[in-house]
Length: 112
Length: 113
Image (cartoon, rainbow over all chains, first blue to last red; front, side):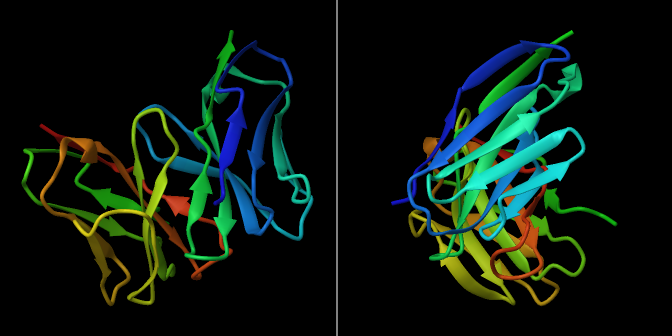
């Protein structure tokens, strides 16, 4: 059974700091991995999608990497800003059942 | 272009009642998936529909059902509501049945009292 874990559960950093969020999964049979942002009580905003054949994706200050063999992905946020404060979720796409399996998220606070 | 829309935004129901949640996908998207998100946890997969057929089902009881209409919009129905059904219900749309980027709506907050 696929399990997705995100560490740390919560993170507080000062503005301007570079940071890394971690995501691990137990089964490497995934077809993609997607990082999302969720503001309190809101829906999910897609940040980056990495297909299983790719190693990384970049968008602005965000960079996500994928290492299927070790079951790990990281989301790197450069020069963090208070507006980056949110919960960040990773999800892996599964071949069977067409569903996505989510981690519990990392709650990020960027202090001015 | 409009994103994924969901209605209603909030809903309060009593135990034992039935509820219907609605979702309209992004124009051109043929796949709709439903997720339940309990406070403090990641979303859990309930159903996926593609071209009006069920393509995936998560580990939820038969009280949960869904359907997709010819215009690709979808409804999620939950019967005999329990307190534990209180959650944020999220709808996601994508172009194809799998391996595509998922786009989520704002969700429907269901409270069961």
